[in-house]
Amino acid sequence: MARSNPWMRLGLNAWSLGAESSAVIGLRVMKMAAGGAAAEREAQQMIREKVAAGLTLQSLAITGGLGFTPHSAAVKTVAHYRRKVRANRRRLMKA
Image: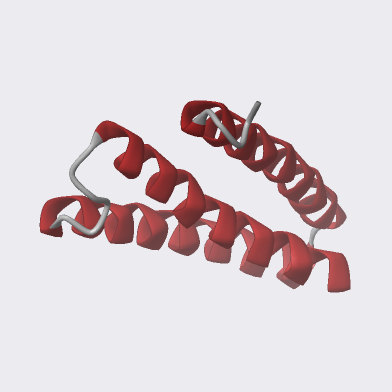
């Protein structure tokens, strides 16, 4: 059904983004709960990444990089954040 319905596929991708985001939140909470310099660096990096991801997405929206339909914009927005979240999950799993 998801193959034939692009909105269903988008919904599944958004759900996956939520699940991965929850995992990243848990990993970050554990790292920050340990305290110390590593926790401080993680907090600063988290803020920098969130600001950068938001500004990049805003730039894409202004320049037409997200496409010109609601579906295209939603798909590219979810994909943008999934890449960022996946990279954080991989990085935090190594530590």
